[in-house]
Length: 236
Image (tube, rainbow, N blue to C red; front, side, top):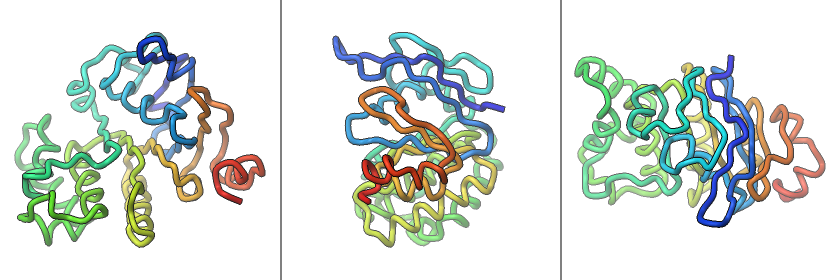
């Protein structure tokens, strides 16, 4: 069953059409990757899904509900979380304060504490540094914090935008291991990632974007061995 459906979506920035009538879906339990060069429209798609930008036309369905014109905070309360590009942690707050802000749509304090324990189990480094000011952490640690904060809303679907950007190879491997564990725990994942090889290694399916259009789609494994994809995106 499709948890997320995007149908004939068009998005404009002024007179420039950034997204040109794309359609794709994410099934419950999948990891689906959107890959493509800078400027292909990947981040714009995530921003439109989560209500940060308005669509010119088309529709977005989340669990069969039309959310095309739904406010972002309501989309979070419906069970969708967004880990933005560049992490965007609250740099002057502590790790714990950042995490608790991720649960702002939830009311049950007991459930929030249980989710916090789960996040600490998944990210032991966040527990060790829970009283540290977030802005003093390394890029990789801030990425973990951004992911942990998103998980605090207890999402059914998590959208991740360039989680490996600017990280050392060790942190990149660690972040992708965590994404796999998040998926294994039952959370559906839509992943935007420039590191196409890594993304295709952990995804079930993928869509390839070029200048606002989907030009190829299929099982991640087959795209990983597609000669055109390897040449254009994998540096092979």
